[in-house]
Length: 60
Image (cartoon, rainbow, N blue to C red; front, side, top):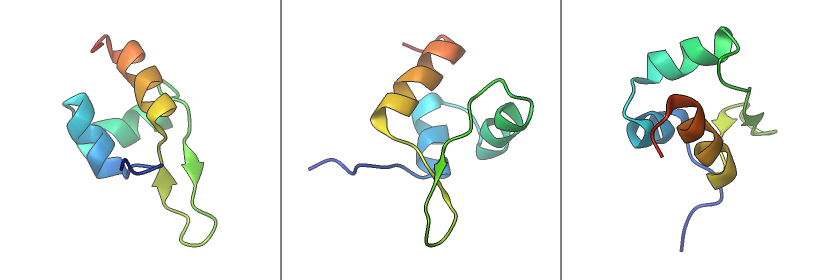
């Protein structure tokens, strides 16, 4: 069973970039801001979000 959301570290690994690069792209508005967990405020990426980020980086 797949997880509904992935962490920043997991998404960075999937995209083949560092966590810092992922956050820098978000800050520079290259990547859209992900949803935040309402309890702990951590970033959460859905599979749809990951597919969008792969298209932006050209890693499809």
